[in-house]
Amino acid sequence: MTFGQRLRELRKAKGMTQGELAQKTAISSTYVSKLETGAMPPPRQKVILALAKVLGANKADTDELFGLAKKMPSDLLSHVDIGMIKMLRSLRHGEEKPAHELATLRGRIAELEASETQGIRLKEQLPGRQEDFFRALVENCPDGIVILGSELEVIYENPSISRILGYESGEFIGKDTFGVIHPEDMPRVARRLTKMIQNPDDTGSHAQCRVRHKDGTWRVVDAVANNLLNNPTVKGIIVVIHKISRHSRDERAWAEEAAASAMAKEYHLTESEYRVLTLIAEGKSNPQIAEQLVVSPSTVRFHVTSILRKLRITNRTEAAAIAVRHHLVD
Image 1 (cartoon, rainbow, N blue to C red):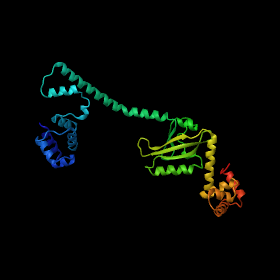
Image 2: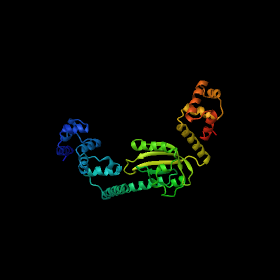
Image 3: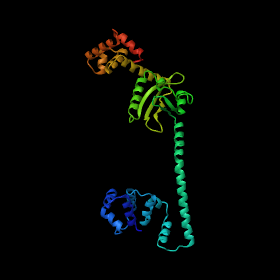
Image 4: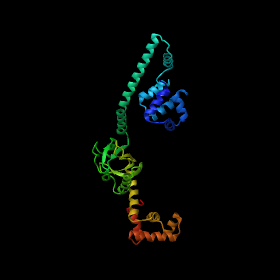
């Protein structure tokens, strides 16, 4: 049987015309006709693979096509050296080979079979090895890693969480995420996490916030979250936590800055009013404030009146006292 005859058999078994086969393999119907009649030599490997795929040929049929075309698939060719190719060609032409060369050929075939078997075993073991690799990577990561469930409860923690937040191994599991976040930071973090749950494609959300250490103090952390709730392997939100500072002085500065921002929001101060109030607390007069902010004195007077009204006070001294109390200035 020739390559063309076997190609015709497979095509008819599939119920396809020469034109349909040609269209699906992006070659001309004339070329297909000449292949089947033997007017054209068998095509190159890439075309044989394309024909076999369109015809739904199994591995045996595909190998048969390659054999009838007197070609070798590229995946097998990569395992064959030049000496073996010469030997196969000589055998194909009916040349008798010495016994020691035939033994060499059989040995090479046995090596290929052993290599293939070893490759299959390696592929079978690879998923387990990958799992061990990534587990070791996560558990030895210097940053804290937690996975939150759909209710934002902690379902996984890596050992670094203990170093960063002081909880014993496993003690952080099941905790309500919002229960350890500073009350002033909670609304902002809650909005971001809620948005992430509602939008599965929203990944890489970044935030800085204060998290309660087991000893009751607040630790400033930098957190990046990725939504993998729809991933069948993870089924959660992965949060990577990096502790920003170990110095309480820096953490106090963060707390004061957050408190000042919360104060401005509490009294519904605009950004301009916030800057004016800060300068009032520093003891600056209206002309000095106008000069520093590069605005007119009448604009400053307007902001001062609005600030006093929003703070429900009657004079600048009280305004300065409130600003100091809320850490707008030292």
